[in-house]
Every structure is written in C-alpha cells, then in structure tokens.
Length: 89
Image (cartoon, rainbow, N blue to C red; front, side):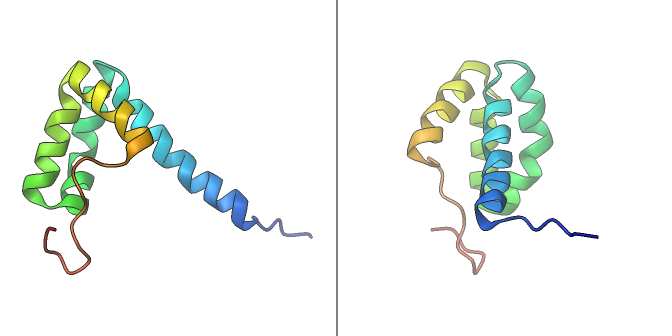
C-alpha cells in the first residue's frame, strides 16, 4: 500500500484555508453572530479575557463585524493576541 504524504504547501493551504473559512463565516451579517458566539472561548484563549470579549463583541455586531473582518483579511488583527507568557501586549 502506498501512503499519501501531504506536501508542505498542501499543509499550509489546508491550515490557512480553515482560518479564511472561519473569518468568512464571521462576515455573514446575522448568521455570523452565531459563529462568533461559538468561537468566543477561542478568542478569549488567544487574546485574553478583555481583548477576547472586545474582539468577539465587535464581531457579533452584524455590519460592524462585517466591516472589521473584511479589513482584517488584508491588514491583520486590530486587537493583538496575548504574548506567549500569558500577558497582554
């Protein structure tokens, strides 16, 4: 049997595709709110309590979240992730 190995490019595309899919799902005006609520714990883990809640709150507002995520696709996050040691920037 031959085992299929994923190339590095394929792995990067797969991982990056998931990130883009999550961001696009958040951009849907009212259905995106449900996605944001489901991912609020992930935001808090990545950004810390205050920044995570603020980021999720902005994403949950229908057209504000749409505009914010559209800009973040090209610019990057407005609210930075916390440092590796657990403290905010």
